[in-house]
Length: 399
Image (cartoon, rainbow, N blue to C red):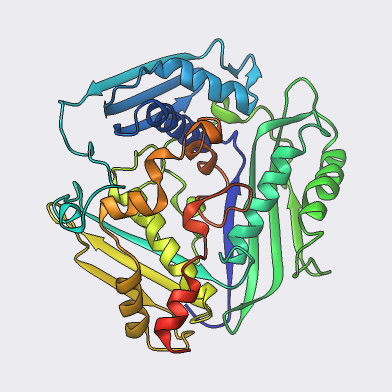
């Protein structure tokens, strides 16, 4: 990537069909873990007009009504019109209960180091964690703004009842010397209910004031007279959701991670229980990268971790600061290997990943992550977003 460039990142609201699928898949993960933290599960979802399809493989003591879980998510998001709603949509399931297996039945909080070395991962994975100092949450500015505007759009429904749950946002940011310089463009697509479609000029004025202007009220980089703003540039977008376009779990990987500014794994995050290393390894890599940036050792930091089936430890850990590090990348890599344990049981222990959908969180955790990103969240307590390792990193760096 050049030092001077423009990057556009996209976010969508909870009612976008792909994100509806992610939320249903992670609601199933939440529901199973709340009853049985030792659950092994992968759940995928697809939606189209009046139809929801759920495929899942699992081993769990939990009692699960997959159709009811899906209907609750659909209702919460606000699909209540004839075209698609929680009461009349057809739900088809393809479920496979896995053979009993002791894998994952250990208690990571009481395991010894040698016992952790006996727990190999079950799938190959190369995952990435990234952080930069462009925003308070240490994620790239384009995806930070896209998520913020999308959340404002979803929240505007109370003031603008003609809005439907589906919506899409793109934010383009110009960079100079790898630092955000100005907001180049904002493209927002707001879906309207069929029963109350206002004039397009009214929608554009309402959304500009209550969504875009509100989102930038406290931002350090604001809009200027050259910022290009398009609100429903193709005119009215009516109905939206699964009645207009289909959805699938795991189709928004860049949106879930760093908005295309940094690399992300080919594997989806949503719909997988904590025993899947391609999900939880990405959380641990983000945790390491964020603490490196929080310690001031680099303006940007990418941590790449590779796993192979049958091995407990990663086969490689690599660091790239894109020339922004205060010390050599190899030295940062050595520090990360000393302070961060990337073995599966160690990740589960450090981040407490099997117990997050607990009563304190209302039994809901992972499905909240399924919309507006898994990283950089400030609206919920997320363990891999802590910067509690900053001082230890500094002490080993000699800075």
